[in-house]
Image 1 (cartoon, rainbow, N blue to C red):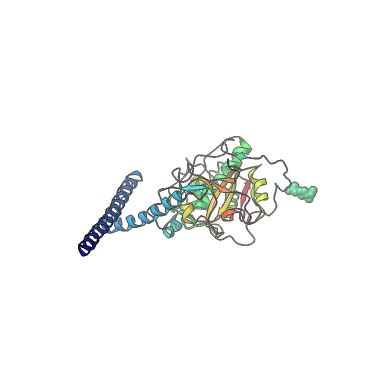
Image 2: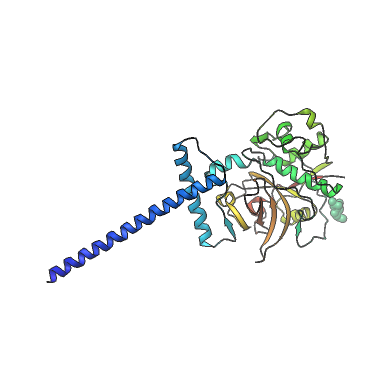
Length: 343
Ligand SMILES: *[C@@H]1O[C@H](CO)[C@@H](O)[C@H](O)[C@H]1NC(C)=O
């Protein structure tokens, strides 16, 4: 009797175990299936197709890893920002870094003037948004060309031009990509905003986006279009390095080109909120600080215009934590800031 009971219990236990196992297997394959569906939906949404089944399998596996990371971060709810399954979701972080940035190592000394015209500025508003002042063009998209430096240069130039003339004119990144071979500037292979500002001065201006539209690839310089300098600048200055208070004085007065370390996975998938890292100070991306403010929870931020289209971040923008303890600023934002000057 006792023996029989034991056997029954054992059998029951075994059955239960089997059930648990098969339930786990079911839920695993369900998860896998829903991931496949998510990948298909994401592909349709982003117009993505792959050349063969091997490529698709490889991309699916990267997508799955990324989505699991994004879901885990968002579900943990421990960060002040959210991540999103955006257009970079089927790229490894290495692939993302290779194609989406393009800021090079700056020489020392840097190539804009070291004088700082905003040095003695004392009236600094508590918040600023150059978009609402009409000094910022819509978000652009550099695509798979490492010419962030051209987009950052153009955004800062569009800004100072609107501030000094009252006219917002969208300007040509492609002209910089094709025609500016000065200093470190090498089209889709990277460059520096400082060199590009100096090119604009020597070239007697930069032409418009509509006259010399963006192609997203290296092309031959169209000298005729490039000689049509629609907007001129008088020079450029470097914001004193490693000073967020200096950067604040500058951004209070005009949109400012800044270099940042955008190489992290959280930056790749940033979707909303105030970004607090993690990131280092290996500057690899040029963007534009177009304002600053304080979030509802009291966190101070820089408002930064990126060049990865409107589907990334907050409609193409990122709010990055301001006044951090490191003098370099978050992701090195205060290390190599600069701006064009105008009459
Ligand atoms: C700021 O003030 C100091 C002291 O008055 C002066 O020497 C300096 O030239 C001023 N800087 C600018 C950019 O006006």
